[in-house]
Image 1 (cartoon, rainbow, N blue to C red):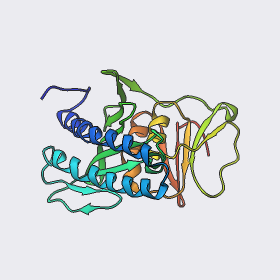
Image 2: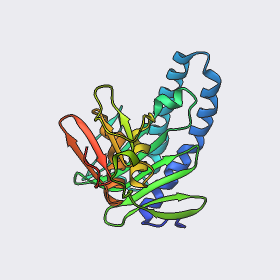
Image 3: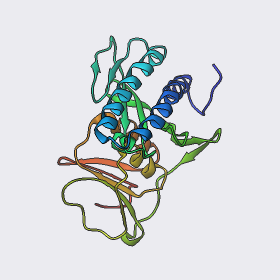
Length: 236
């Protein structure tokens, strides 16, 4: 197959699967914008759209590693080997409200370690991706660029993303709640944010982002029940 992005054939096949799925998702997004008079109806519609993502992409992923299992927030399917695809629609709450800030998060894990990670924003047609040991990249406008975490340390200069309902660390800087953890991690990896703090969250939403951050030079840790992601220079 022709390689679309810098990386392995498997990475490119996974991206092609995302692109195929995103075509229907963009249509669904157009439809949900027409359902804003009924938020309940929009939620039901998005739940069905999320299920269709899982169904449509699974056929394509089986061509990548036929024996791999599948883990999503709603489905756990055991595979025949050591491999597992981890898939989630991150930012579903934004999708429901007709907000384009959502993404498909897709990771390939082998023996409990993430080997390939993709976070794809279908409305922006922007992809963040990484392979273990090969760095992290952004792909848009048919061009790939390597990404790195920021080097900021001064509290007043920081932009910190939150996905919390409880207490937050008291720190200067700009606080953001975007509603899409997968993109928040991608933003830390690419230097658009300097840190991210979250309550416990479904692993499927952050499996890809975790590798992105590490490959871009950042750090991620679990502090009790909280998830703390930084550029490696900030202490939270």
